[in-house]
Length: 102
Ligand code: SF4
Ligand code: SF4
Image 1 (cartoon, rainbow, N blue to C red):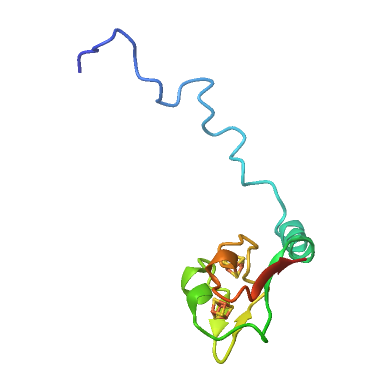
Image 2: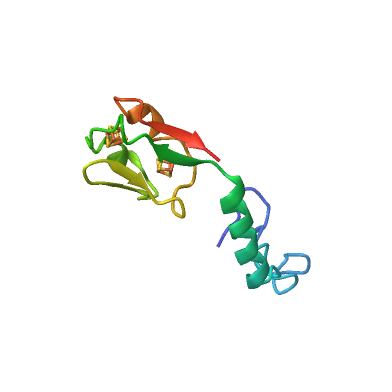
């Protein structure tokens, strides 16, 4: 194949290409450490909370939540294990029933 710019490919696994050496950024972290890290993170992060007195069960928050953390019956409830604290649901609520709390 003719070169258009006079340079060779920048890939190909030559010396210094990084292949076969250190592995990758995701390796080397013990699974147990990651698990306890998630638990610690879960305790420290914000999660959405519902004021059941204000909630009318309209479902707007359930529809917007990408984490599928909200289930709406008579009122909304948030699965705190799934909630990422992104806050997307907060402005969706027409009754200001949602807040972020630690
Ligand atoms: S804060 Fe984000 S993840 Fe949590 S319930 Fe609201 S939309 Fe879902
Ligand atoms: S958007 Fe507000 S009123 Fe509607 S279900 Fe969610 S918390 Fe309840």
